[in-house]
Image 1 (tube, one colour):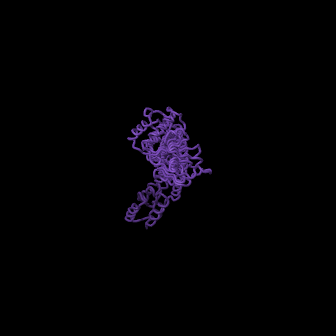
Image 2 (cartoon, chains in turn cyan, purple):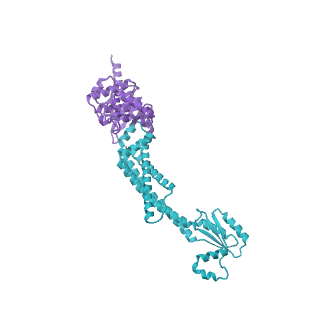
Image 3 (cartoon, chains in turn brown, green):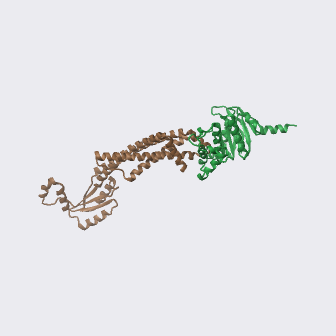
Length: 285
Length: 231
């Protein structure tokens, strides 16, 4: 391992320009990936905020028995998808309407009778806030005898679903494209390194080095280049994030785990790129 | 140790590099491989260190069958061989000592033993004082000594030398040749390809001569036959 590391480092020393060039190119392709990642992270945050508001409301028939309602509330609370179930009485509904619908306050004042029904508001746990689960919960709520009607914003729950799917798909496609670019770049620099050291590799073979032994420093070198590229990309992304926050809008940065994952991803594509390249070119040396 | 049995080797573009070559080099033997350039000396060498495979026939070296070797076996075989070339093949950006140590490192030798083993072979070839010199700072003869030290450091059973004196002046040639004789005297078999007939005449060693890919003379076989035929 020690020797592998030393040999890998030797290449950085021998071809510093080439090494800097490859680290820079990898850094920039990962940086673009990182910028896109920031967009996705912030979009996810925004979607999360919207998701929080996904709820199912069951309107109760007038005069629903209190005991039955209380029992139903407990049952609903125990549904696996449900985060919370809150009973809203007729009076509470009216108070809320008065507070929220200021323009209609006069009309409300003049009402002889409260026209608003009592309801149970059900919030779902994260991960269950999609059309399928929301519909399933709504269906179950309809099953209670004293429930008059069940409402949820089917349209915008579906839209949210599509938006989520789209963000994930675009993320995967763009991510894959830049990963391929980075792999090709690393593959090319490893190819140059192999050709540059072809004489040395021939000599290594003559003195009895196995292919695995010859390959290892190149793999390590690729991984290190990817790792450095990833680290630089995180640095550039952070700079971009600071600038955006100062001049454009308040946004979020990667969590520590996400940042580590990006650097690790850099190392991984470095390893992968050099593995593809070194195997092919060693045969020709 | 090294056994060729009816070996044929075709050139990739047609024609034969070797035609029906059979010989056997025993443990501890010194054998010259002679012939003009293009006679097939280097092809024989390459077959011995498994850089080439025979087109037909059988090549066995140190217990390995060269016809059917996996890449890993090739590496293991080469650790039992020391190989020296006309053009030295040293790494220019490493010192003499590092060049020799390199051959041990690639075999995964323990680093604690490397320095001592390297110094021992550099002393053996008379270059201990120049251990820190780079190849460009050494004369041709000295570079070849470094190459020989590198070949010896794995304690090979056979030393292959392909025109080891081809690039050297007369004095360096004598020195290198003497070194090879000393190595042989300590028990290592040596196969030396050369077209320097003066060298061949100087020493009482076996001579295998190739001509256009065919083995035309083998002193071990022919002298025995001559002696048997003598009245």
